[in-house]
Image (cartoon, rainbow, N blue to C red; front, top):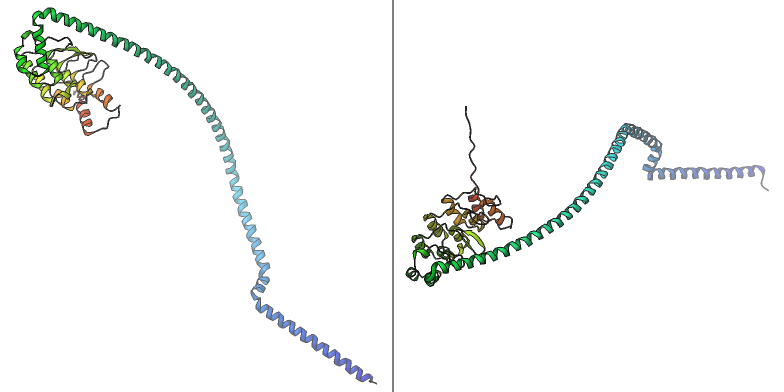
Length: 346
């Protein structure tokens, strides 16, 4: 049997062993904690300082909130002013909308009036065209009657000279100077044929410069106006410009006529065109040069109140002709010279 003393000693040893185990476990736990702290020292430091950071963040948030509150308090008056401005702008927008609506109504009314006016103008133009057509027909009829009367007068006046006059005219048309001289009579020189052409006007249309010179030397009238080809009161100068394409050098022809006292300023045709107007109408720079050198007037006006420069501009600018160097030169030539201002000195 185990004595009490041995039993006590045995229990003491057991207790000592358990105590050693507990101490050893505590030591192991401490070691583990130290190793964990070493491994996670950054996280552990954050964990230790986290409450401080939270407090600092709270202070920052409070400071930011106070700053925002001050900014909001400062913006409140501006928002009030903006509200008033917005109301004013809204009122202006409303007024503008009403104004636009009124303007649209006016535009619609103007369009309607314009359509009515266009219809009225269309009817007026139609009536004008009809009247002009009637006038043209009347003019043609009268021209025929005038030509017939001239023909009758020619036969009565010329009598047995009719055949000779026809030969004279035929020779002029063919530019046969010898036959023209053989059939020439001084009474024929300014007499018109059945179509209204005088011998001088006929050679101008044909472009026979030598024959024209001979007729002028025989006292053909360089200012005699004729009614030909539906044109009224055309002078030889005007005719030469109208038929300029038949001449190799229109300058020579015009200078020849002017040297025999052809009038450069007369305006006797239907449109009251001067020779300079006709030169501008056909855009002939050569003719314009010659006429301006022989007293043609830039400021002369036709029946519509237009100068030669205005006639040229209407025909060569409004119709979108390319503005060449020649175009600019003609415009510059035809511009009327400004009159000098009179100055009075004390």
